[in-house]
Length: 291
Image (cartoon, rainbow, N blue to C red; front, top):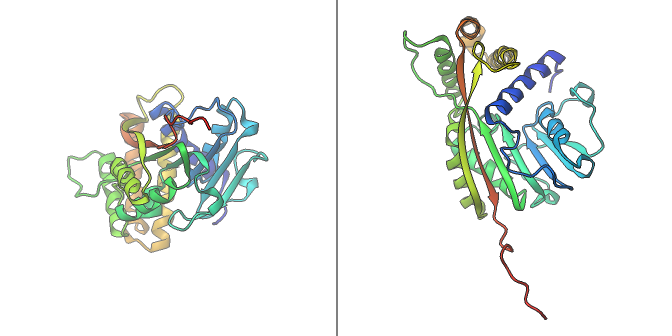
């Protein structure tokens, strides 16, 4: 992975803050952070800020085992926090076999805004989540969070943000990536449960908006602008790496500028999708018979 600037890391935290504000919780209350000895995995961890903030919310953080994984890792000195002794980072692609010692290990497995880019297709996403379910201990939970980028023709009446997100959906599609996976998280989780042969209970799903720009809640407006900047940077880098003419020609830059102006003058909503479930503990309710 190339060098990551402090500005890039700050922008990545903007997405973190928007998602947290949309759902009101980092974990969607899938795990009780008052417990001791919690084992938590964040997949597609990036700078690791999600894991860092989870630790700050724990009643007994010193007893936790916190793991962040990604397909490539940034140096510790570039992370926006000091890495504590009980936090580690693992270079791991979610479509590959996970270490055996992590099977059935975690109280919570979390993946956010990474499933589409890491998997690419519905079937691959099911495979990813099936592998992640194997890492959840009986009674533990899995939480999936993502966006949905629908491809489509841009109509003259579309607002700049509608055109932008359609363009992004079209770019995903052109590169063989299904950008709509966020809207299918509940179905993906159900299919993964069947594939892995792991029963999941307490299943739920939710769709929540983030306000970008004007109309955002106190303290959130700047995060919306930073998130748009982050999105532009990611798209520009991807376009240059793949020689995508739609990006290299500057067409995306113009549309991003129009969308930023829309955010600063009118504001608009973007939707987040979540699905979650708990790995069924088949020992629950069993009565131990006397010898």
